[in-house]
Length: 406
Image (cartoon, rainbow, N blue to C red; front, top):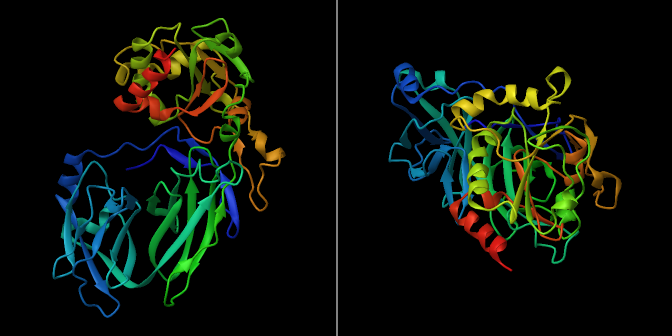
């Protein structure tokens, strides 16, 4: 599925670079399933061959592979195995195949391959051809030496492999390891997490026997990771407020606080806002405060008044929020490219270039992507990333236990 975020800086050809993610303001409209079927047919086929041209039966193949919960899965529904002709068929889901990476792997034969596909490539029943070549396991481990124990914050890290400009594979485990089966070639290894700066490292795989073991990567901790257990910074760079004459975070002590960094230009931000509405409705304000931090666009699109924000969210309010307005205070912070605070302290890792934030407030909290929700406890200290408390019923139940505990 197309993402509403994009990388905010160019990745260096060699070495490791830390990058931030920001939201895309105007995403192209997704075609409907009916439109896809009408123009291109009900689905597409994948045909996997080895280097000699013979069909590869029993290979897992599909669009965008990710490893989670101990198995490889497909971005659409789940990897299936190719038949005796080396083929399988996928019906369209809600996605098209714009700049998609089709991946195939056969673990027993140690074969793997990629192919780039677009919708015209599969028109009139054409199959996406994937050549599965000799491959080897590429393994590695991640650490974060800025915390004790070193693996405390790396259990939710995702490692991704980019093939050219396309993110092809993702490996997510709780033990801070990754394991890809890759044919010879040049790739980029992309690593990201809740509390670690997103980094990319060039990856060259040579044709050889045995596994390729990558040196352990020590991840640079973001300011949000460094703030855990410490007093929450006051919001800087605020141009105006909506639903409030202005507030000071330290004056909210005695309550838990959800500090939600978002922007009207960010698709997931406005789509997930009703979940915050539901939380606002569930918990009394003397137990839980919610404060929005709207990070503005740059230039003429600056949102520096409540009236401008109202105009910017009018469509979201109508189509996504069922006519409801934002039910909590929102700080409108100025767009101001700002170095992350940790770029100037010993958290900076040698060889890693820390990116820049969209605003002073985002830099102070180490906000790498949007939306990001931060939980602050009753004494005013940062607990950490709070999306887990917002995104699911189970998470809201965990939040309730915190709030209702004496």
